[in-house]
Image (cartoon, rainbow, N blue to C red; front, side, top):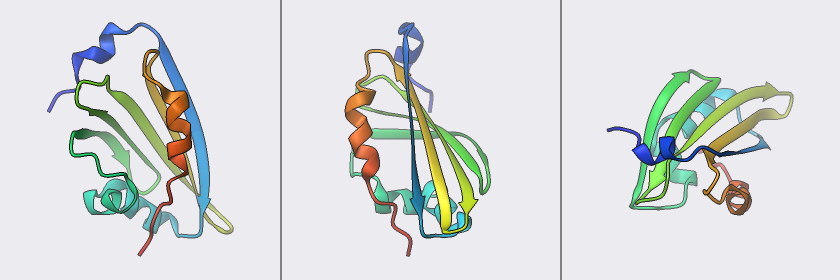
Length: 115
């Protein structure tokens, strides 16, 4: 699967970085981020969403491209850092300037679920 060409047609970018601290181990967080089963527990259901993992450095970093339908693709880089109370998840999403990242900021408040 290829990343849509729409990305390269837009010269401006928006970058949104957010973080959340969770009471889980780095390994538990990694399972929730790096596997389809894990992502299904916390990502909103979107049957049109495409997600292509770009690279991964288990259990600390993963990056992917995702898009839904005809929307431009955005690149997501997630870093997982151990902290005394569990793990800090740092998400940086880069998208074309026409993509409404400011509106997506609230959606980051989704809860990561760890079984």
